[in-house]
Length: 113
Image (cartoon, rainbow, N blue to C red; front, side, top):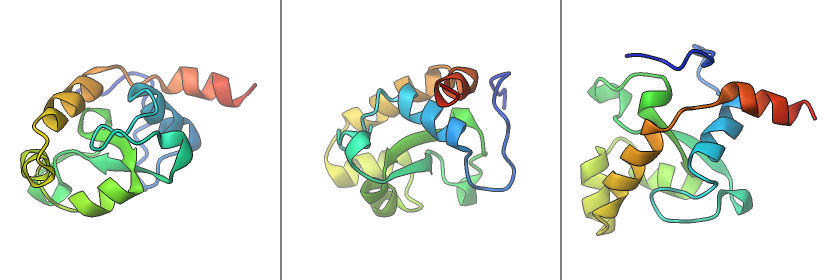
């Protein structure tokens, strides 16, 4: 898996503040699963392809979402979750989001102001 050059690759599990901010910016502060404004709820970083199914850690397999959707999705595949929610557009929204650059450097700059 190719990572963005400025991705820290946090191996410990929890994303840094800058990584979390970068993930939220990448989805324009909107949960790609339900459309909730992420500024008004607790945010989770979801593994799009569950780790048990071979999903990797890193920006290509992670997306910011609301904690409610993260809890509902659990270890479901993206397709299975979209079908369960009755929203086929979820897959497209998530793929668009993960295709965007995760700009951790910009997030660090914003946090330092």
